Length: 229
Image (cartoon, rainbow, N blue to C red):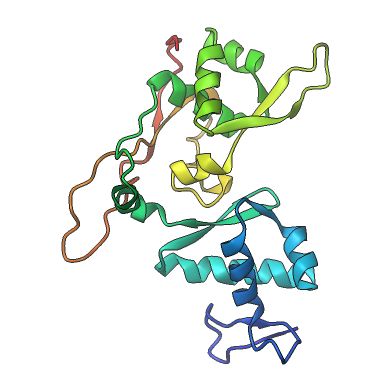
C-alpha cells in the first residue's frame, strides 16, 4: 500500500495493491461509507478492504480534509464513522425534501444536553444532582429526538442507565466529532454551560454563497438556573 501525489497535497490518495481495481484506498473508503446506512466501525472497513488499520485511518483523514470543500462531511464518534451532508446545506436539503425548517429545543433540554455532551457517560441521577430538578421528561424528549442514547450501565446498585450523545447530535449541531465541542472557559465546569445551537430559518444566500445553518452556534456560559423541564 503506497501514498501517491508528488505535490504533497491532501488530495494525494492511498492505493490498495490490486492493479485490476484501479481505485485508491481513499475512494474505496468513501464508497463503503456512501452505501452504509448506519455509522461504520473502522475495524469493519479494515476487514472489508483487507487493509492495515493505519492506512484506513490515513485514508479517513485524507477524505475528511477533501470533504471540507464539498457537500458531504466525515462524522466520527469513537470508533465509528459515517458520511453525512454538510451542515451548511441543511436548510436547502430540508426545503428540497419538504421538511420543517425550524427545529427547536427548550432551554431546559439544551441545558441537559450540554451536561451530557461534556460529562458523558452520565446517569439521570447525576444530571438531576447538577440541575436540582427532575429530568425524566427532558431525557425522554432528547432520546425521542435521537440526540442522546443509552451507552451502558453504571455498575452500582440498580445499574442505572448511562447516557451519551449520538451521531444525530453531531449532525444537529454541525460537529464532526465531540472534539469540536466549544471549549470551556478557564475553570468553568460543564454543568455551568448551556448549548445554544438552534437551527433557524435562513435568508437566501448572496453571491452564490451558502449561509451556515448553525451560524449562531455558541456556548452560552451561565450558571445553571434550576429551570424545570
